[in-house]
Image (cartoon, rainbow, N blue to C red):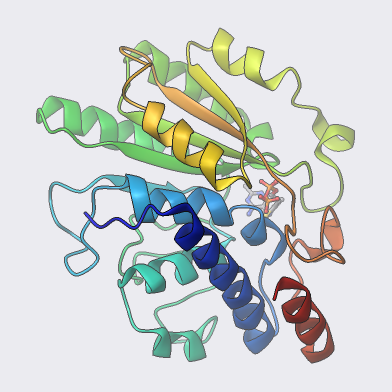
Length: 273
Ligand SMILES: Cc1ncc(C[n+]2csc(CCOP(=O)(O)OP(=O)(O)O)c2C)c(N)n1
């Protein structure tokens, strides 16, 4: 387990991760910056302050596990993992290249990635299975699952939500990156999720609803996990902004799956700094 839970240090880390998301997608000429930028604080706080893990020994049997169910947000995942020490940043050069360990959607080729994802809607069921396994083996392990708001329109997510409550999986923490935008437009226009908190509660979950781009709120939500949800699964509804930090990307579905060109990269980095 590693920790640097100083708020200013975490904010600096978040800034660095945002810069790397933009650089990685620019270098590859493709990728998913929008839903990566929204999830920065969620993953920085998780890996730096909450998770029991050992980047030098990614398969340590006692570790907590993270399933990146919205597997297209590989830029934020790779930046957070590299900065945690799972692998060298030299690998960035081969992002989205054949033969590299950093593929466009996350795979277990990458140290620190637990499960191949990309086809949306499956991660929560996987986290549930891991959580049941940990309970059967009487291991104190926690399972985290990051999902998108467009993703949770999938029916399979709600089957998994039901079963987590049925099996009393209080070692599962789902995180919904509620950035309000999916691939082709606004979530509310395509398939409205509201009332989202009441939906999860009615499925038997304990819900924390927060501003997911405020590191202090994200930390508090993680700290409550395991304390206030005895016998029930826990979900963090993280209200975020798609494209957070880059004004011309914010809340624009056009930046869901498009890389910035050199000019756009320069403008974005200038704004972030
Ligand atoms: C089953 C499935 N259907 C469609 C896609 C194509 N797809 C990739 S990302 C995406 C939008 C996801 O939206 P959201 O979950 O809100 O992601 P975020 O905004 O956080 O990036 C879609 C439809 C997919 N990967 N899997």
